[in-house]
Image (tube, rainbow, N blue to C red; front, side, top):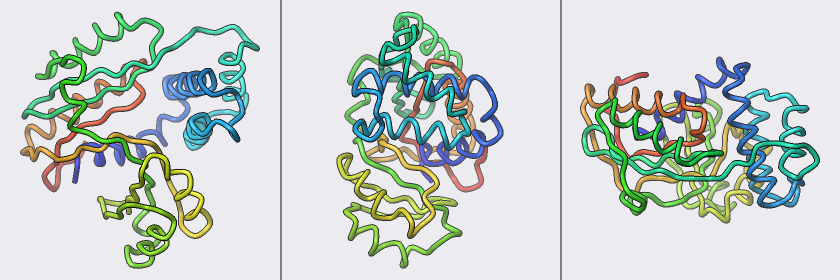
Length: 244
């Protein structure tokens, strides 16, 4: 099981318990604000905003919070301006990390993320030091207990998907970035879509042992707890039996 996929599963379960915490809603608000600032406040014409809003709704973010974030981005309300910054780094075991942030102070974010890496056996990298190890893809997660690979394969391919894999508790449909919305719509109503997103998937994985795997999950947990961090990607593969 890949580290990123394992983390996505863990984080999804964690989010259900944390959904009422201000930290979760704050991260969603930032994502909504940046998307609306870039492409306008109408989710029907701004696909990035549509994804951000649906992710917020999945974590039970109140409608008023979502609308307020959009209004701040479009100038109807005053608010802090955030920018998207991706930091790159190395974790224990020669693993690679991409850390997507939304920040109002990139120098502060860089210092804090560097501190997190160094305190857990990793280090920050320069721009483009690990980015080439990943590729952007659309990802759709469908609970494996709701259908089978055989039943999902042809509808997914017919809708335009590139691949289908079983990863733990989920069937994972991958698409070209531009095809994510088309494939999602093609599967909606036929299958239970639990999550979908644009993601950075590793081209190859680094296999780690249980001890390194535990340290890597602790590093990802620490990074995720930092308010400015929105998404995490890594390229490690955990051995069977390693849990958060």
